[in-house]
Length: 154
Image (cartoon, rainbow, N blue to C red; front, side, top):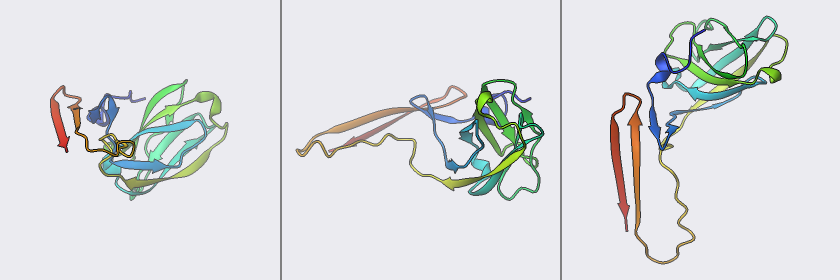
């Protein structure tokens, strides 16, 4: 089993401690929560499936011809599912073992691009008067480099 944050999934951007995502995913298996989708997957329809008695899960990215090696879910926690053709196309999942179905099953995972999702949305409707709004956000790369982004609106 490949540990999370040790391969391709270890390189990511964070804003305020939250990973910035470029793809939104819809669809999964019972007991599997999608936590991170690699941008290399690209938009499209992938396939997540469990094999055997349902305790092993694998990922097949959109436009891929084969699913990755099944990862055995040994308990609740995070797991890394890699595509069979390119390990850079992965899903980082959180599994809840007691909710996994005890049978082989599959589900489509719809991936769609998202934009400008790293910056928090500010509700300004409660301020009918002129005001000054300043946001300072720290975007960090897991290598430890920090970028300071300042936005000033009047």
